[in-house]
Length: 383
Image 1: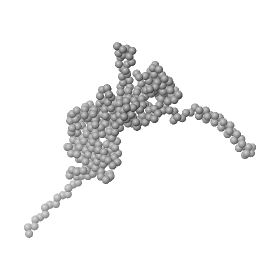
Image 2: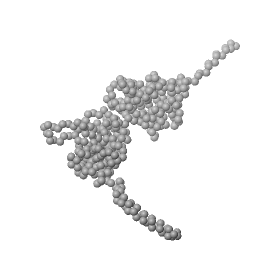
Image 3: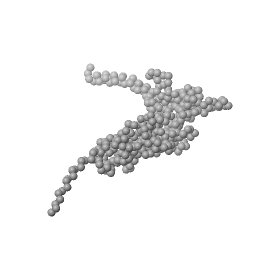
């Protein structure tokens, strides 16, 4: 076979192989659906418009029916949590008609608000393939855990407090009772104004609860050590003396401000170690707002056992952070603490507190240089 005939045979074979491949691609194209083309359940939703988030989980023990009106629909009792947007981020807020929340005003983790609320509301899509039960009746809603007595509720209101941005009911897990590779990872959901049951599938877990300690943001400040340019400490070991250190004009070395006369040079590594310990300031626990904390003197906070002050450069502004540490909490490896970043009585881990119980004069300075010997008095010259 010459070269011309060989090329012709290869061409015919390529055509023959291309036909089934083309048919397969066309078949798959008919099956494949562009995710972006599927309508969103909350079309146009943006977290920027949200000012308040209310979450509710039906209580396991519901109030009994009214014996005088047994046929009257019973109101659902919820365990609830409400958070609001503030200038500093998200914070717990009291709920009208509910018992006082001692954490009202405490910071809420913005990362969890994003991952367990906003990310899901932006991701839920609805089409004929995700609707598993159109216009479900009350019995069907209960089967999917989407009736009022069982569904977890998210209600998001805009920054004016007047308009509902999104309201979602979340029912039971779709994989409940399933095993193996056939199990579906997702939950059944519906909008508050619809009885269409939708299957919402997602890759990662979805934490849904109203446990305040699980939403609390205990991190008071995340600091870059090289932006801290002033640091002071006073504790019982310093006998009430405040030691101040600062870095001027962007220099790396620390200088003591009004250092005692009987000390040597600043120990740079020791001061820097303290600064590194303060790059991540996190409370162990939030107790109650300061206005409800009672006698701070009884907690060792008036005056405080340890006082720390940091000045941090943020752009063209200085941010001052003050920390006060009091007595050890009974039966806990924690100490009472206050911080200018949150107007709460909090606690701090003992591991951090012991770091700042040091004798600043002995640990943060070299010994004073030896004094030169005093020369003997010169002999008198009577002449």
